[in-house]
Length: 437
Ligand code: C2O
Ligand code: CU
Ligand code: CU
Image 1 (cartoon, rainbow, N blue to C red):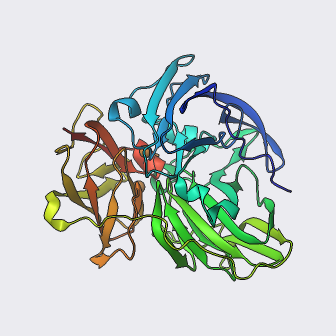
Image 2 (image 1 turned 90 degrees about the horizontal axis):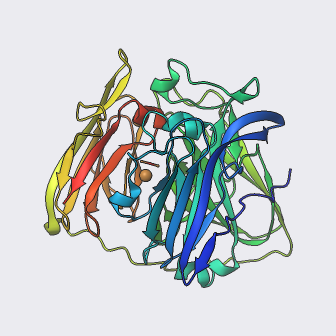
């Protein structure tokens, strides 16, 4: 199977002087998935949803139309936007419309995504197919060597079908986080991509509700150049890369000559129950790349992509501790002992200040932590300094780990959400409100 049709880039309704308007309609769709017909949910009939392609400086309005039979809304994950525009607590009833506006900031070139955020319904709506990618391009994208790279956007999303519909969540799925038996890349099982020899650029999004991906291309280093909504300062060479729910990675591969490269998902234990039952020891094939053409040696990598200032500890005005917890009877997940209540402010921060948060996970399973609006830097994990700087919006907190992050609260005021991005946990209360003022 040759993957050629995805992603469809969404054509704006209007595009005037850097002001773009897009429409995304959530709807039921009959799709063919892994050879079977199934009723899923999609944006504009596309699974995954269409690509929103933007440039730094673009002013954007996204119109969301809810054509589902239940409430929903849209969250533009990772974008630096006003909390009043993000408004994840505002939902559209069936037939209603919502609008979201933002400006793609200078320095925000990276990958983002959109998905529903109607509390209590997020998991099921996303598991059924509601997710799509956003790319913001900056000067790095328009200069060598990235202009000559072959770019592929890979949306990783698992699903499970049953009698022509998406299988329901049952009992323990809400505790463990459901992993669908069909692991899809851009809505297909194990797609193949034809690419020319040279620099291959993979833009990876983990749009699964709970599944972790430990990615490897045997025989190649993954040259990480970006995470979430940010370029790194320079490439970081990795043998494998853990991509947790909500996270994005921008990776270069030196595809020097003709041959086949395989993108594998290696086993990873995120729960005490061990790695996903369907991941063999040698890894599960996610996608393959058929490289053709004249050998290219060496393939040039970018040297310097941007500056990321280190956060001066002297400027930190407050520190906070967030501790994960939960119980099985009743099944609920907590942060600092509380399940989510959208009427309650859990934390407060002063606009313009920088804070250090220590996120403590005393539980036996990993949880990916996500904060809306304000990007952060990871400082250390269990006291070990982070080896490189990045602006990110998701960080995995492993079982029995303490992770320190630094967050400058600049640019906006208002109330923003933070939560576990295993969406079963989010829907079961592992979320809080932060008021910045
Ligand atoms: Cu990707 Cu609050 O979400
Ligand atoms: Cu988000
Ligand atoms: Cu969690």
